[in-house]
Length: 112
Image 1: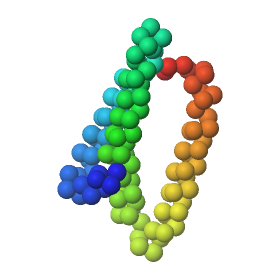
Image 2 (image 1 turned 120 degrees about the horizontal axis):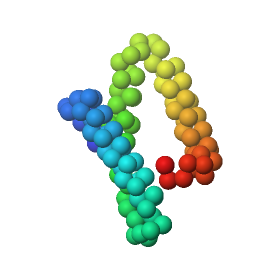
Image 3 (image 1 turned 60 degrees about the horizontal axis):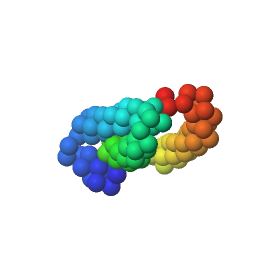
Image 4 (image 1 turned 90 degrees about the vertical axis):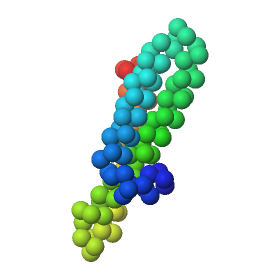
C-alpha cells in the first residue's frame, strides 16, 4: 500500500484500480475453484492460501490507497477532517459486519 500510494500519481488512479481489481478478481476465481476441488486434491489448500495473499496484494495495489487520494479531492479543506472521520467509521463498521456475518454465509453457500 505504501508503494502504491507513492506511485498513484505517476501511474494514474485508473491503471492502479484496473490492475488491483484484476488481481483481486483473478484471485477470487482461482480461490473458488481451489475450494471447490479441495476435497478431491488435498494440495489445493496451499493454492487457496496463495490466492488469499494474492487478493491482499491486489487490494493493496489499487482499491486500498486510491479512495484516500480521491477523498481529499472531493471535499473542501474545511470539511476534510469530518469526511475522514465518517469515512473511517463507515469503513471499519462495514469490515466488522462482513467479518461477523461471513461465517454464517459461508455455511450456506459453501465454496461459492
